Image (cartoon, rainbow over all chains, first blue to last red; front, side, top):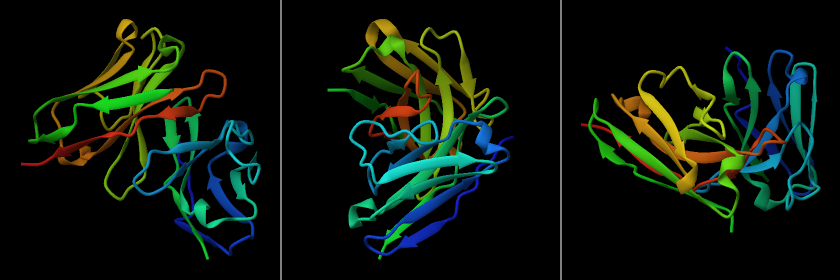
Length: 107
Length: 119
């Protein structure tokens, strides 16, 4: 089965750049999607197909994907960006898979 | 307004059944594949099941295969999840979500319905 590995937590200073990684075997060959989930709320799609932003998502959110690692980058981090972030892919052997999630703390 | 509203959750004893529903509005329901994703208390997201727009393709996570059945009624803009032989480990907040056909991502999510399996 296909697995995605994320760090449990990432911290970033206010106004700096946060990078959240998502590791998987040859993940660069797959489409990676990223979701933001704030406490008590449903997940929100922030990046689709590696690097595309849905309408309404700030340009500060960007994504990349190559080799065995996909990365969500949040520039000029704000207090409102504190949330759990999940990566997700579709794999032919496992169907849809989510990473374990990363808690982003803005200091 | 684009919306998904889940219902049907509750407290149920191990081994019993429950049926979840998800009502869609504000978009063309039968253009979208639909999915159930769950989240156990304090844990991450877990994909549970998905169904194509015409019910022609259905998939389940190994953890629920043989116990859960997904279905949809496009005339009623509704998605369902029949859950049988429930276990304590099925306790979770169950979300329905639509998959945007061009993006491949889950673009619309409901607020979830809580299922608690306990004696």
